[in-house]
Image (tube, rainbow, N blue to C red):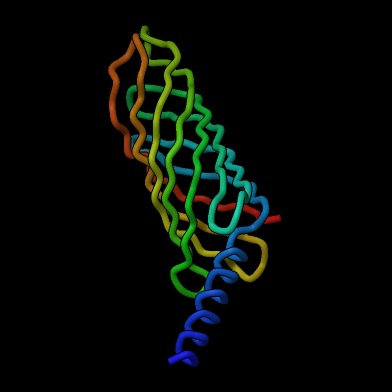
Amino acid sequence: MKKILGVFAIILLASLSAQAQSISKNALGLRIGDNDGFGGEVSYQRYLKENNRLEFDLGWRDSNNVDAFKLVGLYQWVMPIEGNFNWFVGAGAGIGSFDAGENDGTFALIAGDIGIEYNFDFPLILSLDMRPELGFNDNYSDDLDLDIALGIRYQF
């Protein structure tokens, strides 16, 4: 029984070690997509500890009714799946500015994030994620957007 527990402890420690190595210290790239138009963001990810990181995205949106610039910050938990695949979830907030014809102004948002990523053997990471965003402002209707995007980042 002690041998089985010892082997289990070694496997657990090895998996935690592998999990800690699955996140690079820094990643910089692009996140492209939107829910009802086109958008692009410059995206930066920063390792915090073991399976946690911060992500900051600065970008613009060109949708059917609104053009916007926004800055979003997310705290993410990253979990390995198998091989070089990870999945992640996160939460955060952001601010921005929008132009909706005669109606323009600023807004704040809260966001969630869920996605999957693949770490290549060279310093590149591809991801696909969905970010539900709930926007708040005085001049334009508050609404929920499902921001779906493809990310490509260089890891260093």
